[in-house]
Length: 478
Ligand code: NAD
Image (cartoon, rainbow, N blue to C red):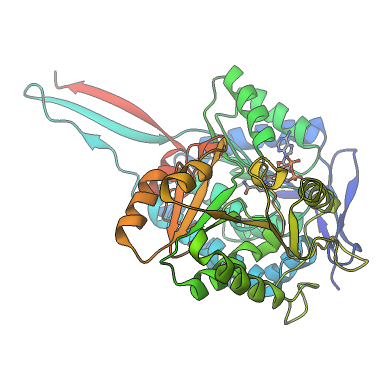
């Protein structure tokens, strides 16, 4: 198996950390070391800030059409390298190889869409107030951006930040997670090979807190973008607030799926099982509370358990595996706590409930019933392969229960009734809704949460515009 050395990338050069050495990267399926990742020091962070400053001064003057050409080239290079990038991702992050390939395809889509959007950053001309005057609004890139991307979709989430920032004319310092660094190195290498100029994109790995504090406090950095957990989101947002810097925060969710009694039960059960256990349940949009209407509860549960029992757990490199390990021991411990809490409250473990195998960070696909709404599994985002199936009586009750958490990222429903579908769309306090489907995040759609699930949007014109700022200009002829 290949091993990867993930270095820092500053001012278009790959470099080791100044004097801090490296950290091991572990394959979560085998617990073997598959690489190392450099750990930036304060000196490296300051070099990256200076590079991003100079990079921005150059890049902001490059035409949108030229930026578009470079982003398109990045997409083409990632497509060419699809197989090796997907392999890296599976080795470091654990997801089945086919899921990793699909993520690479989404990554390409993001670069292609942002390439097009770069040439659509229009301003506005206001109606004239007096002859000879012009009142107009133009958009400019906001400046050097600090981006923090997570380990669950290490390519697609990192690409969303890089592609939109560079497309809008910003420079970026990206700090991905240390769990899956090599895939981010692969993306940055594609950017380098496609001709992104020095300083426009810089990559740091290392102590998260030290790096985020230094970047947010630097007067050079003008915007912060994080995909991560609610506690980290709160921390970075408050620090950014002290410096009056705008943020985009993509944080956690606890998505309900509501199965109404007129749904296609077989279809709903098959789709929910496939979606829930994708990426071993480590998906912010993923389903984590299944509400089933009383009349069809038993039938749905039997059907759902049938699908869950056909999942194949194992190393994502093996061809028939449909669910890999979780990313690290922390997630295994979290599943342990959630299941223990459910058991202590008298819930029924209908499937799974334990660690899987004796090597790797695997957890059995787990289905829990007869659980109360105040159990840990119902209140805290599990971010793993554990799901409750609970019963409800009527529409108003289920919408109230679905909305009762401080999180509001995504929600789903299965029904044949147009009236119920529309009422559900109106009733759920979430930013992303699927009716009879589970849509992945699309490059062209704004993705963002309500309540504690985040601030702002990523993706779509709204996400792109967040990397720009506005100037109003009033001009008279002399
Ligand atoms: P965590 O809270 O320790 O870290 C979450 C992410 O933030 C990681 O990528 C981490 O590298 C980064 N991070 C941590 N501290 C940081 C700091 N001070 N500055 C900048 N970045 C920082 O949690 P974890 O154990 O890695 O992941 C579990 C939780 O994270 C889950 O419960 C889930 O809610 C959340 N998460 C959400 C997403 C998402 O897509 N929204 C992705 C990954 C993780």
